[in-house]
Length: 214
Image 1 (tube, rainbow, N blue to C red):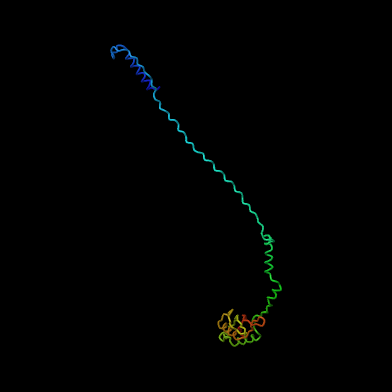
Image 2: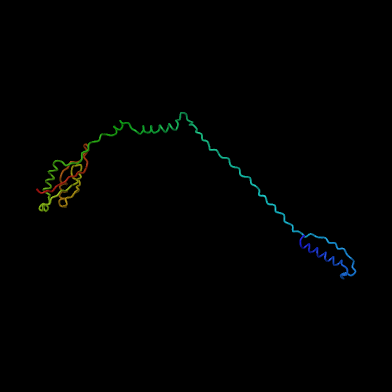
């Protein structure tokens, strides 16, 4: 019982005593009355019942997939009768190719004829006489009087007829008149053409011409 119920009960008892006492003047000549009281317990706040917790459904764990086994390979033999294994084919193939590519020694000797000897272009014996006569006749007079001497290195292309087809000054003397005189001498003199067997060929020859005072 709480404090409110106790206070209410005390007030009711006090009022009943006052009415029962004589001479109070509240109710003249009143008869004594019996007051019956009944204590009513105070309403107690109901405690809410706990809420039932929702049960989470348990999912079944997924089943582990079965491990696949590695595929097995089976070597199938060749269907043809008498077929050689791969290893034998690899070993014999290079030998067959080498034998087919290598010609016979007799065939090589038959295909290559003997090479004819080669003779380069040269100066015949009469070339020296022609060159000396040309120097005497073509020596520039102005340079001779001044005592100028020099040597010219020439590069001559000799044709099949043994004549100079082209003359180049390979090494000059330092004097343009001497270089030009040497080139004219080379154009006038004979040569021996190059040969391969009986065939005449055009070729180059080099030689010097010297201009000197006697």
